[in-house]
Length: 147
Image 1 (cartoon, rainbow, N blue to C red):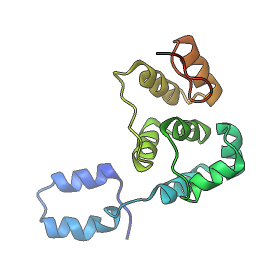
Image 2: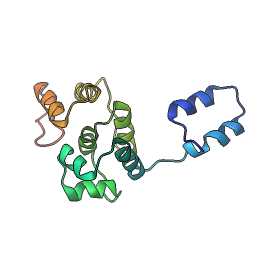
Image 3: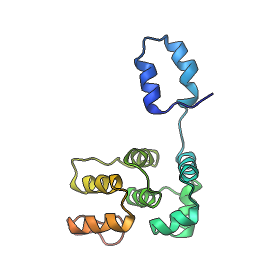
Image 4: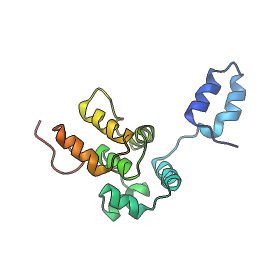
C-alpha cells in the first residue's frame, strides 16, 4: 500500500469519510518514523553516500556513522550541519530536528530565520555560516559568541 505524506493524510482527515476507512487507508503512513529510517530514506532519495555527507557537513567519519546508525544522539547544530550537508528543504530539516529530539527552527528567532533563509536558498554550510557570522550570530560549529 502507498505511504501517504502528511498533506495527503491531512486532506483525508478533513474529508467526510468514515474514520475506520481513513485508518485503513492511512495506517501504514501513521507508524512512527525513527531518525535512523528518516536519514536513510532521505540519503537514498538524494542519491548521497555517507562519505559525501561527512565532507559536506564537516563531521568526522565515526561521528556521522554513529548518528546514521542510531547509536549517537546529536545536538541541534550538528543536525543542522547534516541538513545543509544533505541539501535538505526547510520541511525536511524541521522533520530531522523533530526526530532527533531537537527544537525546530523558529522564524521569530534571528539566527533561526537566517538558517531558514539559507536552507531556502539551497546554500552550502559555508555560505550559511558566513551569513550567521555577518549577522553576528552563533555559528553551527566552532566557538560560540559570548551572550
